[in-house]
Image 1 (cartoon, rainbow, N blue to C red):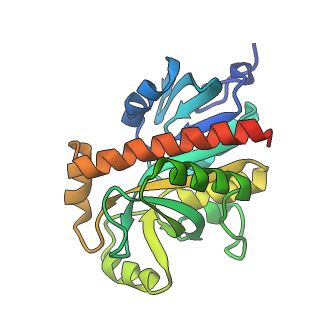
Image 2: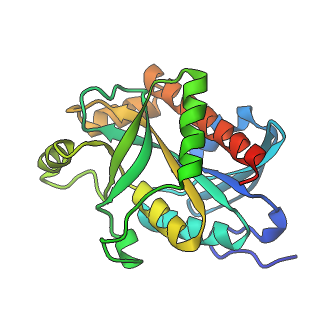
Length: 248
């Protein structure tokens, strides 16, 4: 048996190429119904892990917790066990009024306003997804008729800084669609390590609304946000099927 990775507690014996990566460990409970033979295989720290099959393609679902640091660790250790493509399915807060609650943001590039990615390489290095995997996500969302936007996200490290409104306004003027805490680390580390990555964000906070109240409603099962979560899960799974069929 191959050696277990230190944090995710998985080994290359798992023999899986594709990982769907929510932040919240509880989201695996909502991914499981879409998988055949879903089986939970571990839960260490923030890394809850499950395997299953979607349309015959083996999928690993693994939560990453909150923030770029734990996401970067997941990317590194998943790469070590042979995972070749990773799609984040997370939540974001909109900074544009046309991005409605439940809309998906398929991220074409991320502002590196987090600390984790900057420990790897300076800010001249872009945070971008794999182009082919990005296109697979876009095609999947189109084919299913899900409401979505393609564009920039900003990844950061805290919801509760004193000038958050001013920061959001600054980036909104520069075309950013929404904010999360993990995408830039995923893209940066993935690109450096030769892993295909993509990020699909479900908007759970309308532009200008209070983050605490909106996320609390989402956690309680607010319908539009929960529909968006279902849509991002299906978009990611369908994207993996497209990637697998293409042999990329």
